[in-house]
Length: 286
Ligand code: TMP
Ligand code: MG
Image 1: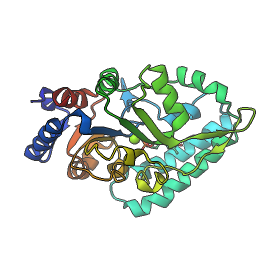
Image 2: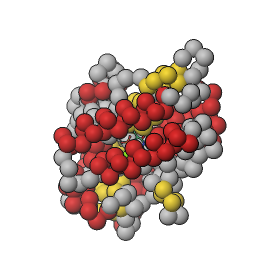
Image 3: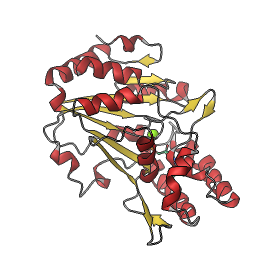
């Protein structure tokens, strides 16, 4: 059915159930389908040749527009809060206020750097960001079959939009909800727009006022793509879900986190830098 599911990176706790969901989505057809995806470390790569790839925040942090002092402070925040973000032994309730703290501090630091709107394209061009192998096929197929793609990101919206624009895949069926920069009249960053989206509030609470999922209420088949336990709630605002397939990229601390990922995601992709499995499933469905 889907030969890519034989890859050694694929782990599935309930193969029969997963096959049933994939079959049901195919039967419902492309007019019932929508894709909801995280961006950082899901559509973008986690690593390449043993080196980490940047998140949309890291792209700014590492860029020439940030002072050395600013870079050090942002790196200190990352080293303090990232281990907390991915710690399988802390509850979401415990993590949530700490993530608000991280995002608030990082956004304050970035807002002190006089970043210019006009510099964003160059910052992205000069960065080491990479989309996962197969991103072209993913975006092209969804566009070709008019399947809406919702990118729900706790990263920086202006940066991630520029990444997909430079990759020539920012098609009209792609919608983004993320943290957007607020520039003053002369195009200098002064703050980030609310609501603040962090790893563990990616749910309806930050989508109030967006009619997006309401408009798509007939699209009851969902493919959800994520890399964090926080991405599992991204489809909570969909009014009626008939079939949902949750695909999770397990990038880091694979052994420690495997159990929790297998319980939560239908398909777990371990250290897989490609979109092969997602594309294989879509090739079967569409
Ligand atoms: P997301 O992939 O769930 O949308 O979350 C964005 C990622 O951004 C999350 O894994 C943490 C990361 N991040 C940074 O790398 N630097 C930062 O300053 C902040 C606030 C987040
Ligand atoms: Mg992510």
